[in-house]
Image 1 (cartoon, rainbow, N blue to C red):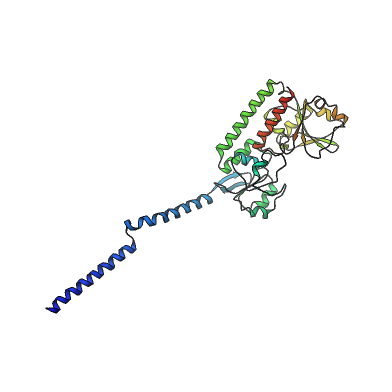
Image 2: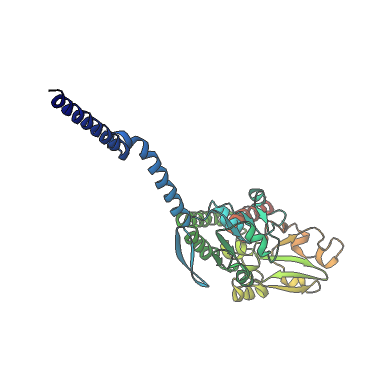
Length: 331
């Protein structure tokens, strides 16, 4: 009797131990109800990190003057030379820029960016900024920087419409680029109406900058100094002797040195003179002082820094200055 009762008890204990071990094992592998809550956040974090990495590394192909180039879909660290105002107008704050001329329209907007100098930037300085996109306006500089990061070459003398369309595609801001162009064109038309009502729109204009012993007279739209706003957008004309050269040069960055002896032949109803510290003082020059535009108060001095650039941000401010000062002469 004793042995027959002992055997079932051992079997029972063994069976209980087996069930207990089985239950522990089941908990270790994780039941849906016990482990879903603890695993889901970890999985979500991993997924989010993967998405962020994908977004940062995502690339697209754009067609440039130098062929097809892979650029970031959403660039975060852009180095841009000369065309800083175009990027600002598109809502992009660059990390590296070329040095800014004093008086530039966008100077206060770029105080946090690293200046890379006025001319050829040091590749090591550019590399130190860890850029994911570089935009340049000089072919030689393009060759020197293109191995650092995706680099786009955009010639500085391209018409602003073509340049903004290119930048809009490169930066993924096509709609914003078109909006900026539409706003500029609308403002130009309004400005032309004001000048026409004041009897100024059909007057002739000469744009010049003092040199030692001569005067540089603008003959191309790519030289800046207000030439694009005055001759292209507002459609005002230069004296006939210059107008033919302007039409032939189109967007080229060209000027013509004219001696003071023959300068009156090149001067229109209005003069816009690029002014800067240390420019030639003509206050005692009798030829200069007897030019009708100078003698009759139609000489308008413009800041070299404001009119040095031809980006859309600067063009907008230049338009304001030119129209306001022309209208003042009619008051």
